[in-house]
Image (cartoon, rainbow, N blue to C red; front, side, top):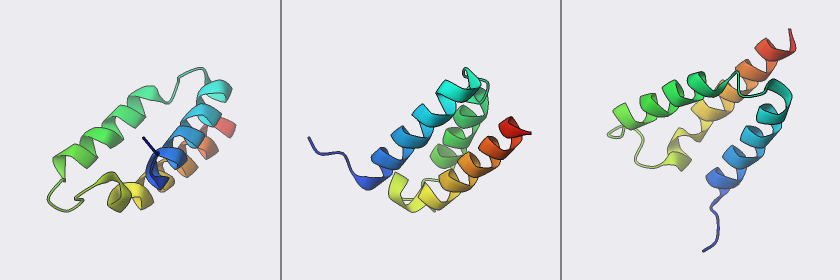
Length: 66
């Protein structure tokens, strides 16, 4: 099965952040995914939610860097 673009992006950022932060970001990612699940009417699939995920990872990476 081929991975779609959203899975590739999530896997990339997940692996990049995981190795740098030792899972400190995990609970925040779970909250973000809960938000996605709670808004499935608005976001039909993860591809539609991807802009929110990118913002999450950018914000988290900046906070972990500081």
